[in-house]
Image (tube, helix red, strand yellow):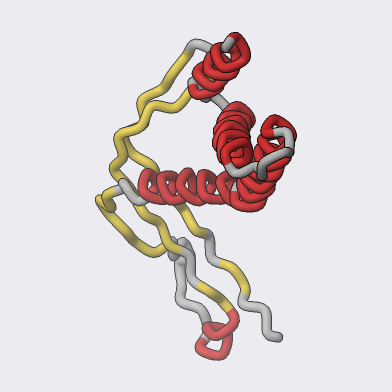
Length: 158
């Protein structure tokens, strides 16, 4: 009777799972208890029911433990969380509204026609945003506009 109370107390303690390790141990303990009870009930006459209970309980516990280790992929969960974070970052960065756009044509005269294919023109964009950025420890700056300047560059032929 005391063993049953101790086993029940252990299972109740393990059922309050805060980590994956405790959850696995709880499932393995439950499988052991179920396997032990089934093994003791199914033992043939003349054999010790406790030995059959231990055998069946340990096999059930090992099978559940191996299955859970196989099914639980920590790297997959990390990848899913990283993908979720990246998609949220993209959503935040897309929260810009374009106020104005233009080209950064700072030359006083046009390029000769034979050189226009060699130069990729630059551009500029003015975005309206609503962000707080940390500039120093304990100091935040509110950003309401971002000016993005893309300079002209030479096209490299491959």
